Length: 194
Image (cartoon, rainbow, N blue to C red; front, side, top):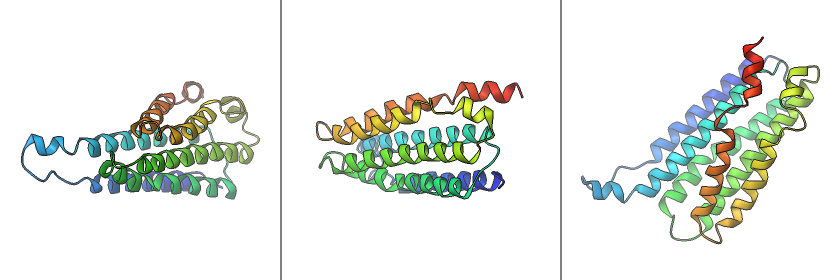
């Protein structure tokens, strides 16, 4: 099964999600910088969410640089991944509007992050099964690939951090994204030496 349609579909969905997120941003009520300052939480959570989606897209792209074969299971795992990231506009808007009211918006944001990390890990596992003969994939993203597991575990703990201080959930998840800012260097070196 060719991977190009899956990659194109994923690119399109992520572009639409980012567009929806930016459309959720509302202009300030007034024409002053003070009015803009009142939107600082909405702008900050938008920045975190945009950065998160960019990091996921970049790593998804790098992952598929070394994939040769996909299966129906991979297609469904990718759909699950896209479903989880499609929730970002909703949780981003909720956190932006109710950052002080309660921990529920941040906890929900944390749940979406957890689900997205778990879905990305599942996608990697399904790719591992579908592309069994791909020695490069197994060597570069095999069983010892720690980043997805650290992200899943950290995101799970971050959900409950909102009970201590709601923004802590967002901060922990943003910190976990630092693991992924630089896509896997082993993949880049492998592709460069092909």
